[in-house]
Length: 46
Image 1 (cartoon, helix red, strand yellow):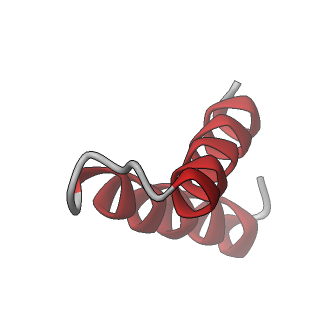
Image 2 (image 1 turned 45 degrees about the vertical axis):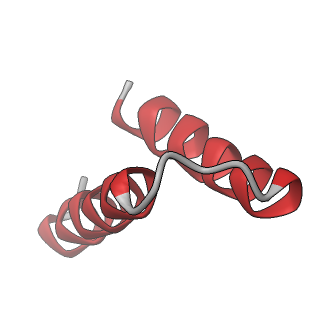
């Protein structure tokens, strides 16, 4: 489920970049949080 949330956030972030219609820095903060969580999970061995 964590991977699904991370992928959805990344897709939304990319769509925001393409459409240039983002919600300010909010989606970028969510993306950074998702990347950090995924990295922590990988380091811990899933």
